[in-house]
Length: 311
Image (cartoon, rainbow, N blue to C red; front, side, top):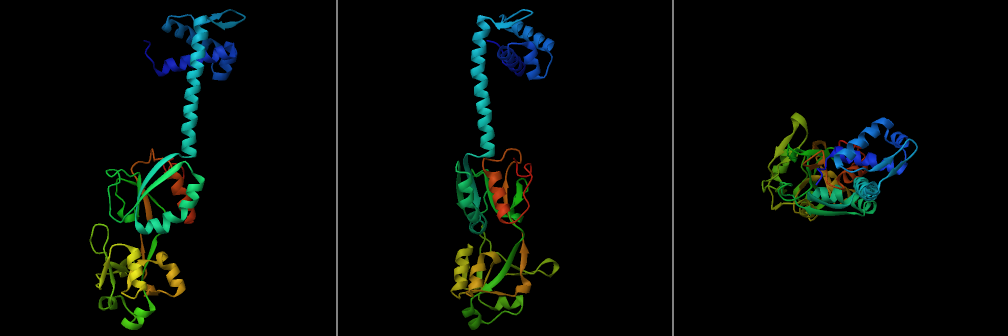
């Protein structure tokens, strides 16, 4: 059995081009090499195979019986290769496959949810398998292609791309709670008022960070309820159970309707953006680059270069 290597593949392509063109000169023009170079490679191929492939004269070239049989097989084989490469290119441009994501609850609602309708319309060949949880997981070990977390929680050995601008954190409360418990005038006042404590993915309590830079104050508030996700905490705020610390964009509608009020607005804190992360910049899974692009576009962020998104 003949050893198959890239030099043999190249020589077979030369042979097939000569047969198709019926001329060394025309084949040379197509391949960008001289007719004499093609003649040398053809002799080398025939010598290596031990079979004469072409009848050559000063006026014509035609395949031998063995050459014609080989050319027919090669035509089918190279067509299969071309089709495979075309399909691969189509998958890159119009992705097909499954994309497994592990996403924070807030990110699922505020970042991923708004772009999914368009993503599904534009890329019908993609199937998104989304696990929504605040528990910090090792995405490779648990079989995920990518995750979305706050930027400061992305592992250092991962490629991380910001999906949003820095996030604004605020304290909110209902008018009923403010009327009954009092309005905090300073961050320290919150230590004497009912607050909804927050427990993060590693089961530790999440300190409230008010202000920015050197003036930032971290508070370990206390209250009648501890929640491990934003939806429950916001519901407790709406019901007047306690003050809540959360993303400003999560409560935009509630604040606009008057159901909640932002307190101590001058102490709003800026935190890391929602960030998508994945293991390798070289070969991202199908559909990830497109999801990143749509999300950043919806957030009015500059598009990434293809290499930045791992295209």
